[in-house]
Image (cartoon, rainbow, N blue to C red; front, side):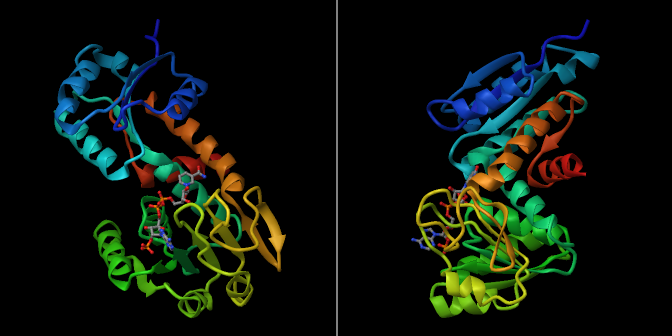
Length: 289
Ligand SMILES: NC(=O)c1ccc[n+]([C@@H]2O[C@H](COP(=O)([O-])OP(=O)(O)OC[C@H]3O[C@@H](n4cnc5c(N)ncnc54)[C@H](OP(=O)(O)O)[C@@H]3O)[C@@H](O)[C@H]2O)c1
């Protein structure tokens, strides 16, 4: 008889995310071990507890989920988890701090429904946050030509540099998008625009959006008005506006939830999976197929 599915939730916030816990249970996790305020120094012993208790085939019945609102802190925990593993002694692990990986994967998969990504001209606005930089990574992985927008050319260039380290063939152009004219210019040739700005910040006016004559799909990930792409409703899900398929944060959210649950289920199919942005995106792609 197979052992019950146990998910060890390592969260960098004082209280582990209820959202992540509910999704885990809905994805079939039978026992959730929730740890809040986790630091890198504590990870080794927590990971040992997960990997030394069940052997052989039973090892894939235990997995680790790294979450919390601070994505950089989550990345440090993921690194510490991987350092604790040795040889075959490991369990599967997933990173989705602040929903960054599942949200970026969902946004790019929504874009892919409206045309091939390979060779497409894409613009990511506010690409310097954890979600935007992952969107750039995934678009680059798919062979899109990406304009990487930020109020600061330097921050945009830093994202490009970091993405090229992971995706050497990435075709990226850093773009300063601090003014309306700069944003309009960054959108001019775009077939795809994904806005990943902080909540409550309008990044592009309706004129800038409608001025982008090649646009096929416009996706805005902000759920707090004013949204990032003026004129898009947060509930939009492939809603046609001015001849462009539009998505708002809630419209993308349905896909994100499906991807999150599928990734959790996938954790229990092997004992050695490491699910970061690219792996989670691939899981999402299989769902859409
Ligand atoms: N639907 C979902 O389930 C879901 C899940 C996670 C996140 N989200 C949403 O996705 C979006 C991106 O998340 P995130 O955590 O990556 O965002 P973030 O780190 O808070 O912000 C992203 C970028 O927004 C830009 N920005 C910040 N304040 C600004 C201002 N006043 N004016 C213009 N630009 C500004 C900054 O870029 P520069 O300084 O480089 O210009 C920043 O790097 C957020 O709206 C978030 O709520 C949605």
